[in-house]
Amino acid sequence: MNAVDILRNGHQTEVTAVANLPEEQRIALSQKDFLAKQNRLKLMCILAHPDDESLGTGGILAKYAAEGVHTSVITATRGQQGWPGDPAANPGPEALGQLRAGELRAAADVLGVQELILLDYMDGELDEVDWETAVSQIAHYIRLLQPHVVVTFDPYGAYGHPDHIAISQMTMAAIVAASSSNGAQPPHQVAKLYYMADTAEIAHLYEDIFGELVMTIDDEERRMVSWPRWAITTRIETAAYLPQIWQAISCHRSQLPGYNMLVQLPLEQRHRLYGQQSFYRAFSLVNGGRTVENDLFDGLRENETHLQGAKDGIVGD
Image 1 (cartoon, rainbow, N blue to C red):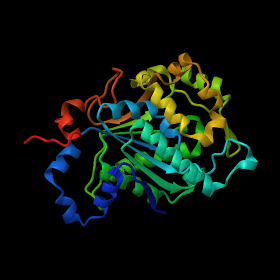
Image 2: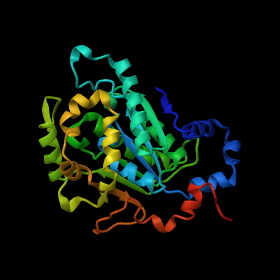
Image 3: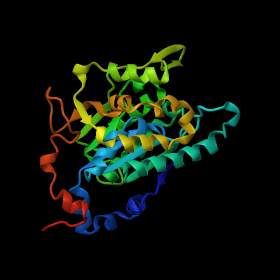
Image 4: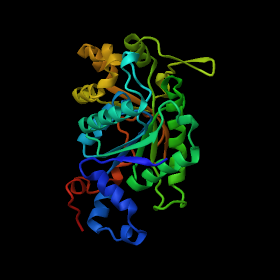
């Protein structure tokens, strides 16, 4: 199955074109362009469905894009099975997938995402795909876009969702694969991997809004898994980006019947839900310890050179 590239603002067109160049031509890219790409901090979120980028990582995507960080999103499925409305009005997997891909584009625009990549896997079947192919596809984009930091679901898939669990496992495997020399592009080593990690407070607030989140998989009930506060390694302040988060969520119009309570939340509860986002640092090559981070790029900032120049396309000698 082939990846489907969503072209945005010329960026993905450039990425796709570079990926298709012969090796000697890729090596011959201008020094200015190469340095600009190398000297800019990069964040990649690797997720399962359209709306994960808004509900799960909307705050950090908006925050870091606003700060000049290069942000990218890989979404594994089109959400073809996610229809919360009247079953009689369900347009079917193909049409719904196209609709939700458009919603994803709109939300990504709101959040300032610069590279958006949609892999054409079937919603609800991500743990049944050809594993080696899927991991290789994700590793391809890690090598191509060279993120310093990657964010994905935790190993429990938030509430046991098989697609969330699958993309978490695929992400870890793809990071390992991308660092090896077995690929068309040069290897790339991700410096930090984070899991989204909701505390019990946030989990309870979600269930107050949506009701009890329960999935029955293999005849066993799965529920929200919260992280103890002491296990949280990183807390990111995102309150300043609440308007963008809410606008991005609202782009997923096909899902609004399921979000009805969410979009009607008073500002105080919105702030509690999305004013701060917590993460677990699964690995880091640049820092460690018990001090709680307030920046996903802790340990990397000192290596960030000419960020403003790179952002403006101006690189010094």
